[in-house]
Length: 68
Image (cartoon, helix red, strand yellow):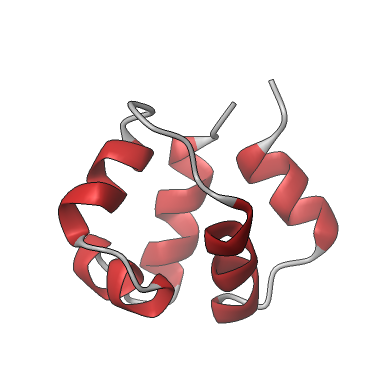
């Protein structure tokens, strides 16, 4: 399950809003908004791009995208 607050705090740390992150991972902002609101899930490739963009550790990725 997505830890929305954690993702949003990392985005803020890098000075990104949803539009900036959407551009970084190559999707439309409205699609990203649906993913953040948990209406759709992130694809593996999108998670990898977020990991790379924010230099996240494997532990960070698990905490953001997979912990309950």
